[in-house]
Structure formats: structure tokens, C-alpha cells
Image (cartoon, rainbow, N blue to C red; front, side, top):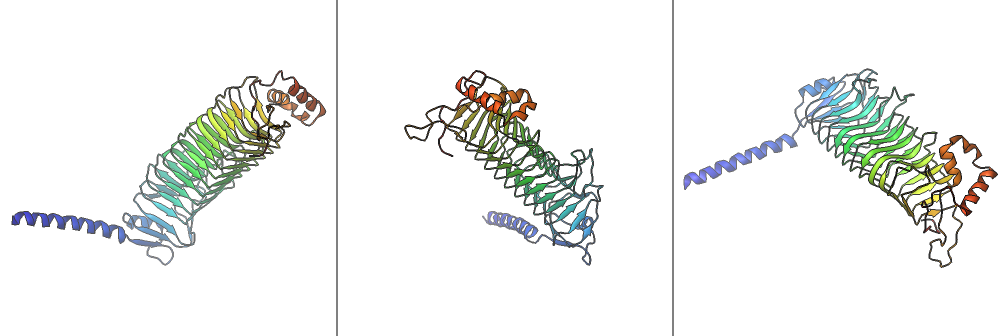
Length: 419
């Protein structure tokens, strides 16, 4: 009996010592300080002397250290935003360990490289890392995540000044990642503000992406993702979402994406997705839809765009319901006289029907496709006639005797009031 009691006591003592070890390891993790007059003069020397889960504080100053590799779980915190300069030659931070936190640091001048994709901060095959509250200026790529999961990129200011797409990388770039949160960032002046390729189950929320050379958001082969409450404006080509299924786009603002090949959103080969409660204001095309099926487009506002919707013939089974179409040059344009999509209960500012039973639904169906829009889709230079008397007569005649416009592209229950 005594030996059993002694064995139990030994086991309890062993468990107690293990718990005590881990408690001290985490609670009393070390703090290292880098800077002038501190124990460590360089970030690399502090990294070499650090232990897992230490915190490295970086004092104000300019640090010209190249290719800094973080290979253990650490927190790197800047004091008053110290500057780390890549001197237009090098990658700055390369993270190859899980559970790294990088915050309150200013990164500048990561070098242009078309082989290595140099970044200010690159996360390479890691988990549970956080990049937050940093400033990135004049970098090739700012934040680059490759084959990583469960990471967060939060509240960073990311700007660049490149003049061409060829010499510019992306602001936030994800490749083969999963469960990533991109929240509260400001991105401007890069090739693409935010870039997703082969990304799963990730979210983009409350970001501003503007004045980028190509896309504010470039989104490819990235299933089961969502983006909401973002603003995409003044980007060279707007936003592109391509080759993806089960994507949700809600409460975003797309505005002033204007040019010959600019869009609020370009949808290409998108299936089983939702576009809800977004605002499209003064874009060349609010939404351009090609090869996309079973997309629900509901409760959006299209205001003063060139084209609100450009719907190509190879897109089918899409639903447009309870949207506002106000003051657009063309509400809906298509390249075919056939239509396999559904329009229902939308508000059209150009609708001139009546509502005798006062139920809020127009008694006369509305045909949003003008004959002139079909002509323009096939021969773009005819846009010069947009406000001419001839075009007005042409469209009026088509309304009375529809011949060429899609017979089935019709809203049978147009709303009488703005939704």
C-alpha cells in the first residue's frame, strides 16, 4: 500500500514540475532590446541570442540589415516605428517559424526581383503569425504569404510609388494559403493592392485599396473566401474575381474605377457565389460577367456607371434581385439576343411604367437592354452617338416593337421605389 502512495506522489510531483516549467517558459519569456546604447546593436545579433517566445524591442533609428531570417517563435515590436531599409536590393524579413508577431515597424525599399519576389515581410510555410500596425513604403512586395495558414495581416499602412506594373509587386500577396484574415489595411500604389491565388477559407474585411496600377483586388482560384466592408477606388482596372466558387462579396464600395478596361468587379468563371449590399459608383462597368453561373446579385446599388451590368451570353442561371439602377448610361448590356438569367423586383430609374394597384410593383414589365447597347457591344466606336437624337429614336422604336433585344431579359416585377 505504501509503495502505491509513493508512486502516486511521484507522479503528481512530476506533473507539477512539468506545469511549472511551461508556466515559467511563457510567463517569464525574455525581453531583448536593440538600438543605440542597448545591449544589441543589430536585429540579427538579437535574433541569434534570443530564445523561443522572447520579445525583441527595436528602438528608434534606421537599420540597414539585409535578409533577416526569423526561425523561431518571437515577437518583434518597434518603438516609435524604427525604420528597416532594404536599400532597394534585398528582402527584409523572411519568417520561417510559426507563431511570429511583427508589429509597429516601418519597412522601406525592399529590392525588385523577378526571381525571388523580394518582400518587406515574407511568411514562408508558417502558421499562426501576425503582421500588425506596421508601415510599408516603397517596397517591391510589402507582405507576402506562401503556403501559410491561420495568419493575420492587420491594420498596416502599405504604399508605393512605382510607375509601371513590371517594376511593381503587390501590396498583400497570398499564394497557396488557408484561413488568413486581411483586416483594416490601407494599400495604395502597388501593382495589385491585394492578391489571392489558390487561397481557401480566408477573409478580406475593412480594407481600403486605392490608386493601384492594376487591380485593387486580384482574386483567382480561391474558393470559400469572403470579402466585406472594403473600399476599392481609383484602381487601374478595378477588381477581378476569377476561376473561383463559393465566394461572398458583401457591403463593399467600388467607385471611380474608370478606363477602357476598368470594372467595379470583373467576374470570370465564377460559380455559386453571392454579391450582396455593395455600392457601385462611377465605374466604367459596375459588374462585367463572363462565363459565370449561379451567382446571386442582390440588394446592390448601381449609380452613375457607364454600364451597370455587362452580361455575356455564356453566363447562365444568375439572379439579379432588388438592386437599384440609377443614372447609368446603360443599365444592362449583353452580346446576345438570348438570355438565361433572372431579373426580378429591381428599381430602374428609367422605368416609366405605372402601378394602378399601388402595391409598389410596376404593372408593366421593364426591358433594361437598349438596342443601342447591343450595337455598342459589337462596335465600340459607335459610343460617340450616345446622346444623339438618332439613338433616342432607335431605342424608342425598339421599346415599342422589340426585335433585336433579348426577349427574355426582362424584369416582370420592377420596383416603383428605390430599394
